[in-house]
Image (tube, rainbow, N blue to C red):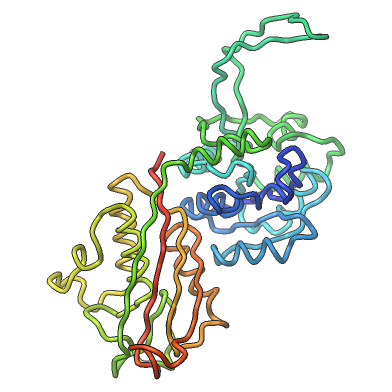
Length: 372
């Protein structure tokens, strides 16, 4: 099913008290916005729309475009319904998932369950059971113990037929805490699917502490790679082509940026290095692209129960000049790795074995975590 995702990230986060809009509060140095996009990217929707604070559009657009190519950023409104309506105005598909950036750890499986349930429902919401006893109180006294057997906690992403949600938003003047409640007010039934504890909403400082503890089991790695320019072909660097320059010499396509990242990821997981996994003795990797090595590395990480958190790579070269194309590298690498990638560049200043544009080196650092 082709589907759009509207990521609601326009909240100011007053209760969070982080000093910035909630979506750009950080966990292990990564914004909630980026963490949400990591999960959405794995789901691979046809379209992603991020609803941002009106005075932060440029900042949010920069963060999003660094991580994902097919993303649009639009200003939100004063209420949740206004923000959702704003995002919905750009939706091109017949079905949409509305997700809170504050639920930055929602697993891909929840997105898939909600999308699948939309085949025979107009409104779908993921829910979880309530483990605690529920009391009704008044003036500090318990007035009733509520039967929790039919009570559920509602989460996001929530799924809808776009036409149905647009119609309801155009008619309502009320303020609802989620879109399923809005549709219920018009008599539209909502189907439930199993949610996940990781879909918890980050609202208070205690929630942010919980989120940070989720990233407690992290590991870091460093990778370095260098290749001289060859005499044939065209340069492939960070999965991006530079036809004005010859390719880098090597057993594969010589993409030193991708190779450095591969080594950083493998070293973080103690899975060897690019040579021990994809060395020159492996004829199937002769001439292989950096994308092949990165995808195979991600497969090795997943088999060892790890997932990338973020990657930073420093390119050292006199040619090419990366200033105008750096974001292309970041977007291409992020899409394959499934995590934010930051690309920096510097020249040799005429020093060392790379001087006079003889080749390209890259130094990468990677952060990975144990998968839930």
